[in-house]
Image (tube, rainbow over all chains, first blue to last red; front, top):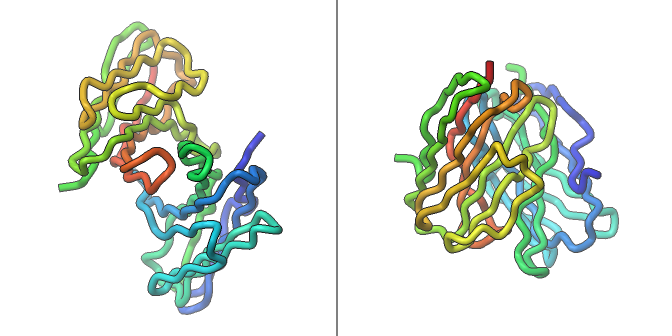
Length: 114
Length: 112
């Protein structure tokens, strides 16, 4: 049973607009969430994270929102750029429960159209 | 120089071959991981090492054998693989288990 779910396999967005990538989780012990970006033929690279004590974390064009009651997080990219086209993975861990390894979703392929 | 280096980048092997994947991290991290990425599947955790000790084996078949001689190096020894084992194998490291993991570029493995 998947503990981290990314239900949209792909998303297309116009350059300059906002990209919103969604992620849901089932394990209520998860308290640390991360987003990774992956280009073809490369390993994932860390993008941004959020702890469960926060509901928002911002880093430049990237903002992650966490809704603990809904067990849902989202990544907002604004404005979207063609170089943002990649696969985005959501990941979670239970740091407060003994540091479990990261659990990843299936990924969402983002295409930013110029 | 990337923090986590994997070799080789590409590997084609027959089902009767024995080969090894190598991973080296230059970040001073204490935890190292092997993940498998197959098409249309989540990244699957295979093995976790903390301070050179294996702390997790995610029901991985014995034809995959990890080795961690020190906290900077991690190997994945492969023998008698099946075609369905063809995938991207990713090594990662982190300061502690569950914190930001830094990935290598992966080894694209094809079993013929």
